[in-house]
Image (cartoon, rainbow, N blue to C red; front, side, top):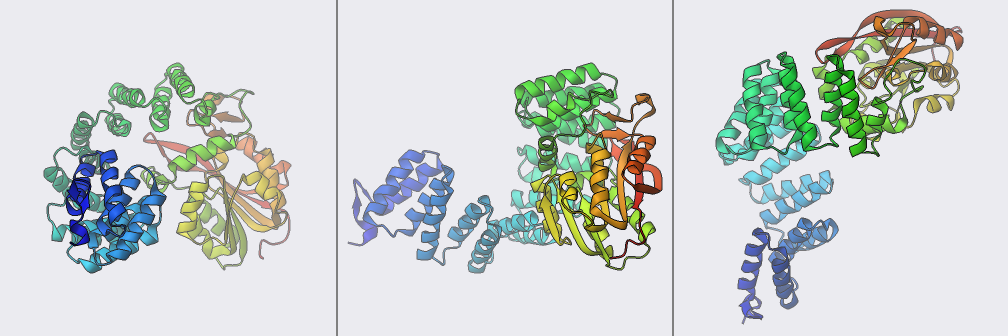
Length: 516
């Protein structure tokens, strides 16, 4: 009698294995685990039992055990394409991107017409920023299986990242037709319509999304934004309130609800929103910071480190896209100011990007730099900057302390949209002066204090950022031995569809030359 036909209790091995897989798919994990145990007790090298036991371990959150079992199953059955595809899924969930990609490629090598593996390969390419490669993989999956709804959905997202909006709409529309009950497809379609300025279509799609997915706060946040752009302010506020009701700790909806109320003269209500947010999530520094908004001497000297880290770690994944939508100009403005200060780039300067974020300034500063360092508080942002490339070193830390520790190290210090998280500028200006060599340049942006602030030299706004007066910026620079060479007033970006007024400042330390 073969091993497959030996008894395992009252069932043959093959029957026990088939039953285990069946009950596992029904979610009866304890019963499945017992059946796999019985099979493996008789046949320890059964590839299917090892593989599906690994998937079961993964379902239960034991990723280490899952990988060991599935790794053994693919070693025993190396020509099994489905095993490799599942192995890729488990590796992907563990963040092992190269290994996951290799597993999907192996599955495709074994079965070139494997639609799921092509789709999964596209997901990996997308996660690594290769949206053109991702689109190609999704299209291969669709060519094999035109009814692969997930591939159409993913293709739409790849097209959206490539700014191929009409193609994205077509892909999402196909996804909704193939799976009319998937709220995510309507949500993504609505966002593309919004980007195209098709507000009625966007509203219809997002409303469909919210009707199908009552527990998704982000759907209501998006709906609130669309209502706001149409001037439907009360409906926008109601949508934000619904998002907060779904998840009282959700930072995005709480923050935007409060900002909307403040912009429309309802500051007391905004403070109540932020108080409830603080009470719901007492360890979160963001609501604590927003509750300090004011314009008197109680304003904290700068945003707390934990606030900055929490905000920007949370924004890291979508930061570049959001700033593009807000017509963000600060990197280009500071790079142009550096060009005006030192003439044409000659790769001769030692430069610090102070508050480098995801590295948006890196490609603009690199032509000027012999050495380009970056520093930022947010580890998640630094990961994005590292992936973007162009820096000689990246450090996680508070930029004032970082600069104090590097006396006479740089010919230029650039800070785009970072000093808006400092109220009192004296300490950071002093640190910059100490880190600059003679003749070195300090170029930065700040937001401009509105006339309504009266005599205050800086204010903490409802956005959680500080604004400053030109008089204060000039006097604080002069006190540290930095002389203003150029100061221009401009629009830094849009916020809530309104221009954010700011200053681009170029200051210089006394001395003969900024050349290295």
